Image: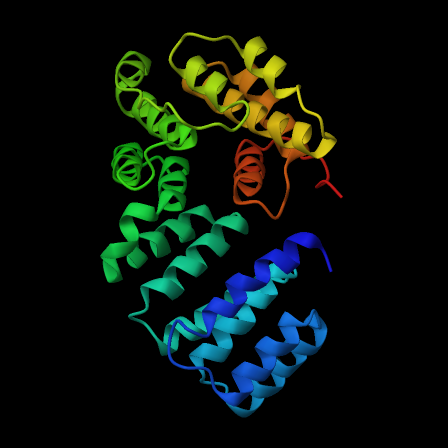
Length: 282
């Protein structure tokens, strides 16, 4: 099993606590998944759903497992069925929103993100994913407000400052965006400091790329270069330089990890620009 899949098991295990205490069937499915028997776990969940097709806990659990093994259309169908049974669940709406964004259904994802925070207002401060989706459908003022709220719970994140800037630039222009750039002092990820400086007008794209290329490990270097190209592409979009935007978004998509949400963002952006996409990284 892939390392990311093992790490993601915790997300699946948390699903059974969303509604009520796990039944024996749910517990057995979770134990199969925990032991790495993914095919057996999925088969057990499917069998249980044949016997109890209107069980939202089973549907949401199978949806989570399907997401993690790449069966995203099936996961969307499971979440849709679970929402029909639990229409007031903000959590289910949030899960389907993120999944629909991964599937490139950005407009549909926004509908679900909005419904999620309507049903569960406590989700709003943490919902940076909603802010990104709002940017892509052109709701820049709403996106700006989302990132301002997220700042209250995540004040040291250059990415939040960058997306706030991007929404502000499209809403009120670069000058206003730069004057209201959120200051972040303690994001130690490479090359976030240089990305912050770039958006502030105090660094160049070459500086961002130079720092991103410095790493002891190839995987770390690739990750750093991914973020450098993603935010360079977004920056060039903000300042109205489509050629440079396309170059960097395409490279970010090439370097992206398809299991990472920001990797999905890069590929969704490339698809919406109708750029020729490279294959996903192995």
